[in-house]
Image 1 (cartoon, rainbow, N blue to C red):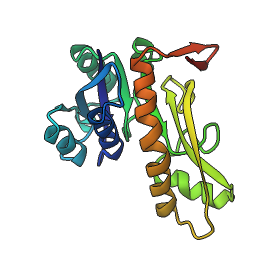
Image 2 (spheres, rainbow, N blue to C red; image 1 turned 60 degrees about the vertical axis):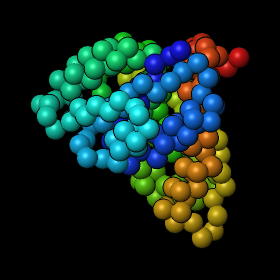
Image 3 (cartoon, rainbow, N blue to C red; image 1 turned 120 degrees about the vertical axis):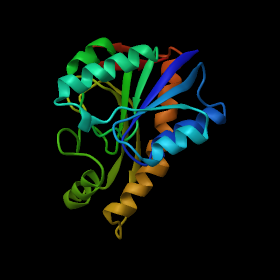
Length: 207
């Protein structure tokens, strides 16, 4: 059974999707053992506690720089014996000293179809604003492994939705979450825990 540690910074809707999938038996050979938040008082911590999952607060503001914070995070992940680390609305960039320790063992869900609308500055509602501004007809979400390049790790799963004429960034964000993110993130986590993802030349092969 793999230990899944989920990193959060806010409300925790993706965390809830993982908790619901786990409860429904959709995450095989893995269990969420700890939730770590970069901020105090966020609702994601309440979601963890109300589901009997250990919750740890590691406030980014308490550390002078990214290196210091990353060292503290690495120690926490190692003490929790993390087999898989999942970014679920985690808004803090970590140093490569962590990605080196967890090569192809950290995954993130991004609210667009990478390599479009990704990289530095593309997060949250900004992504959907840019998607609508550009006038593309399809968008969606991507689950990818995390490496030292922002949104640059091997892609695991993608799911698309159509853009509708009366979409606002908020409406589009909700559709992408409900129809894409909340479906493919638990699926990718389960594939990892089942040992069904292999990375070859920066591409994933799913068996």
